[in-house]
Image 1: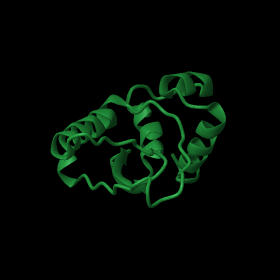
Image 2 (image 1 turned 60 degrees about the horizontal axis):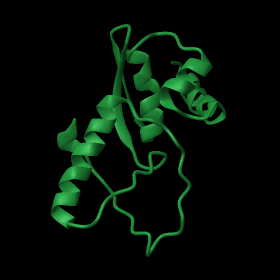
Image 3 (image 1 turned 180 degrees about the horizontal axis):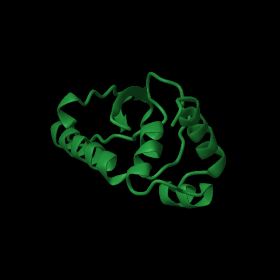
Amino acid sequence: NPNSLKILILSEQFWPKLKDEKIEMPEELAKIQENFMSSYETFKGNRTLIWKNNLGIVNIEIEISGKKLDFNVTPIQAAVIMKFKEKETWSLQELSQSLKMCSVALKKKLAYWKTQGL
């Protein structure tokens, strides 16, 4: 829900270099980021944003067998589970290619969902 979007902006001048994980966000999440960035750039003029998708919190609700489960996860974890809306089964290689994400890092994200029983 874009109306409940909360963004924390960190300035490079005041924060150390932050680790970044490369991923191509699913269209639904990418659109939210693009819309916010466009508004921010319009408001701030010559400033832009660099998204750190391994930081932050996304609240998602997943419905399985009629049961709704709420999760607070990183944008990357949300992106990984959202791909399963496209199809139920992925090979590691297929999912890695679809997200343009390192398969080693992807395995770690999938392990989180596995511990959650998904």
